[in-house]
Length: 425
Image 1: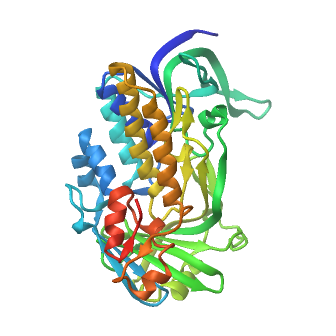
Image 2: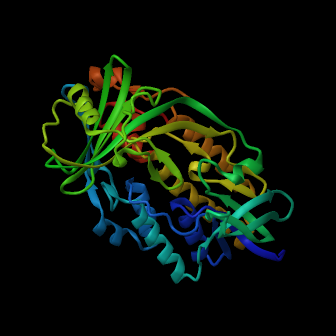
Image 3: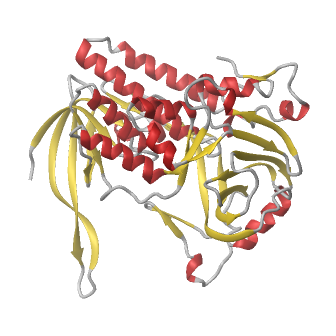
C-alpha cells in the first residue's frame, strides 16, 4: 500500500491558480506533480471575469486568443446609487493588448489549461488527496492518498470514498492552491483570520433584453439594511447575472416544497434557493433603472462570502496562492485573478531557484509583497486619496469603490484615477 515518489514541485489543487502554476513550471522544464482530491474536473458553469492582467498571463501561455473568442467582452464599469448613474470607468484607457474584462464559464478556462498541460506531458492526478505535509528541510515530505468510490452498506447500498493507496512524496517545493479549506495552509500552521464582516449575496442568472451589454454595473446603496454593494454582469447577448448583497442571515430564504427550490449544489457546497419575487423586490428597491423584461430566471442561489487573509503566504519550501491565502469581496473578482498572478510568480521564482541557483530570498520577498498588496486590497491600510477632480459621490464612497473594480496592481490604480482617486503604491 505504501510507495515512495519524488518530484521537484508538488502543486496541490487543480483550480485556475494551480493549473496555471503547473503550466508555467512545465514550460520551464521543471518536473511538476499536480494533484486534486476531486474525482474529475468540476462542471463549473458559473461564469467568472478575467482581468486585463490575467488575459496577459494567459496570452503568455498561448491561451488568450481562444478564450477571448469564447467569452463576452466588458469594456466599462458604471457606478450607480439606488436611483441614478454616478460615475464610470473605461478599460479602453489602459495600455496593453487586453483593455477589457472577459466573462466566460470557469469550466472553459480550466479545460483550456488542462489541455495545454496535457500537451506538455503533465496530467492532473485526480482523486489524489494530500493527507499530511511536513514542510522544511531540504525537501518537503507529503503523504498522498489515492481515493476511489466504493459501495458500502446493507441492505441499502450507498457510495462512499475509500483510500486505495497511500505513499510518501518528496518535493523540492510545494504550492498550495487548494482553496478556502487549504490542507497546505493547515500544515504550514498559518492563521487565516477574518479581516472584515462576511457578506451574504443573492445571485440570479437571468435571460433578459437588458441594458448595454459591454458594461458591468455596480450599485452602491444605503438603505434600511445599511450600505450594500450589488453588481449586474452581462454574460452574453441575452444573459445577465445580478448579485445583490443581503442581510447577514439566511432568514430571507423562502420555505417551499417545490423541487426546483431545494438547495442548489455548486461543487461540494449547497446553497439555498431564492425565488423570482425576491429578485423583483431587490430590483425595485435598488435598481429601478433596470427596466428590462426578464424572460427567465435560469438559476438563483444565496451564497456567503468571507473576507480573510493569511498571516503568511508560506515558509521554507511550501507556499500559498489564490483562495488558499485570501478571500475578498466578490464583485471585483480580485481573489481569483490576483491568485493567477501569484501562481505565475511562484512558478517563476521556484524555477529560478531550482534551475539558476537563485536565492530563497525571492520567496521571502513574495511573502512580503503579497501581504502588502492584500492589506491594500482589503482596505486594511486605508482607502484611496480623493484628488481635486473627484466628485462628491465618489469621495463619499472612496473606500467602497476599489473592491468593486475588476483589476489589481497598477491597472487598478490607473482605473481609479479616472474617478479622481489615488491608490497609494
